[in-house]
Length: 80
Image (cartoon, rainbow, N blue to C red; front, side, top):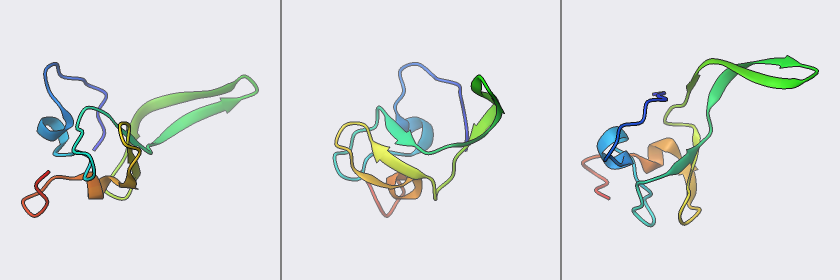
């Protein structure tokens, strides 16, 4: 579920079926990602793509609601 491509005129509902379950905001969510990085004495530099899934920590940038990415997922049972 990773992507670095941004599409214009879309929100997280239409692109990822995600929105905040508390305030319904779907413009920006903070998600904990996994990636590979090179560590040197100068710091870290990320390599390649990143990854996140339904169990990744997620929070709303608007109301600060926290949960897992799966809890922010919109499905037929959880219309947001």
